Length: 88
Image 1 (cartoon, rainbow, N blue to C red):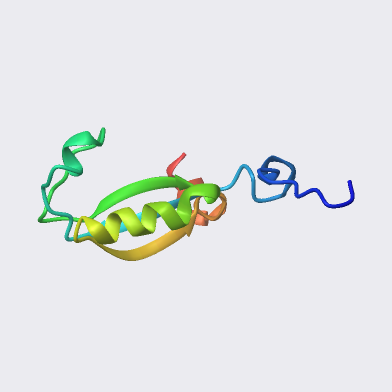
Image 2 (image 1 turned 180 degrees about the vertical axis):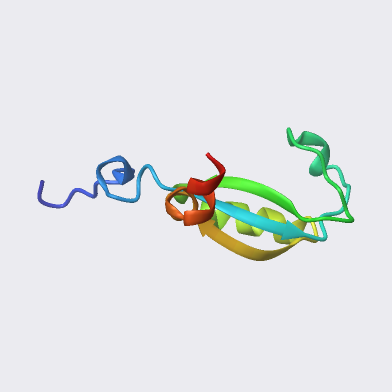
């Protein structure tokens, strides 16, 4: 493989299946928000689940829509928390 670049091999890494949950406030209604499949409420925060491979693109999109990310959590950390175990 001399001189070849292998791209798109994120499926082989430990981070390939990881997802994160963004807590976003301040999203405004715009042409971009008309295309998404969840409702926007300006008075509260919105939770958006994002795969690891798209974190940067999603952060840029949220910023363009006027939102502010106030919290990021790994979904594996949420599932392992004692609070979620008590609720089940």
